[in-house]
Length: 170
Image (cartoon, rainbow, N blue to C red):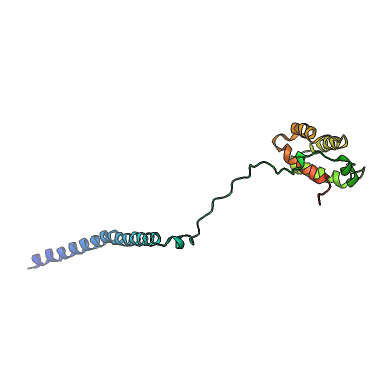
């Protein structure tokens, strides 16, 4: 009789082991229905969105694309498209406007130091630009001369200089 009980007990133990392994097997299977429910809910939400009336869809905010960098031509009143009235410039700033220590000279030094990163080059370029101004060079001549230094930044740099120099158009 003891022999017959042991196999039964062993069988129970084996069954318990099988049941625990079945429980472990069921755990991933039980997760699958939850995932399926989530997918069904998402599909239902998508169907509900699709069933919205056209005027209701307009209320949904869509992301707007980022504006592309402006590559349009400069406005026609750009300082680079008009001749400089040097008499008005010198009348506004005075004869000493470009002398070292003047406000305009200090501004030009700072502009160029920022551009060149305080490399020491700015002193020569300040002198170069002040000579162009003293010569009352045309915008085209200034642009041509400055392009040797500033390359693709010429228009931007010349525009800043001229805007600082020119009397305001009020």
